[in-house]
Amino acid sequence: MARPQAADYEDRKKDILHAAAVLFARQGYSETLLEDIAEQCGIKKSSLYHYHRSKHAILQGLIESRIEDLAIKVEAATAAGTPKEKFHAMTATLISEYISTPDEITVLLNQTRHLNKPAMRSVAAMQHRIVSRMAALIQALRPDIEITRKKITAVAMLYFGMTNWIHVWYEPSGSIKPAELATLIVHLFLNGLNDLPPMDLR
Image (cartoon, rainbow, N blue to C red):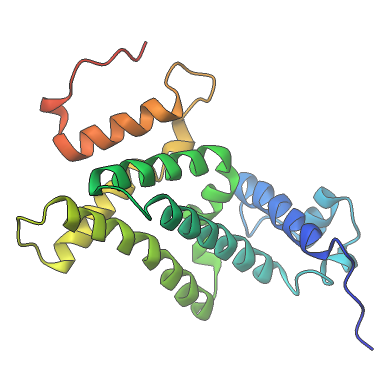
């Protein structure tokens, strides 16, 4: 007979993913043992298998849940408004998420290479939702120009180059608040440095 799920099963499953994210981000996937994750969670190693069948399953679950959550929030943020408003909303959403979950984002950016091929394909398809949303916004922002899909995607990836690593250097206690940072990125991306208006970021 299968072991029944506890009422807090999903919460415990998420707690394990969060604990793993901390360890994967700080010491690496290969260097982290299941024993380490169990200790971080305050449970026995054998209990982990009730929630995740392997360390790889934990990594895959962590990455997929983070991307899925990002995609849902980005899609909600860009559901209405002008193209520029949607662009700003998407930027603000990503910055907020990257700053609030730095360990998960670090794993997403640096540890995906440890996934097997089927998992990588699954993750790539999920990432495509977010990239496609930005590509569609870029096209909507400049409907007057003809640009190939490959070039639109390249521009979208340049945008993500500006945003994806914010959690590495951003100081929450610093003088630049997330909303100000979002506005700065939007203006730099849409208008360029030469057209940047005076801004008090002291």
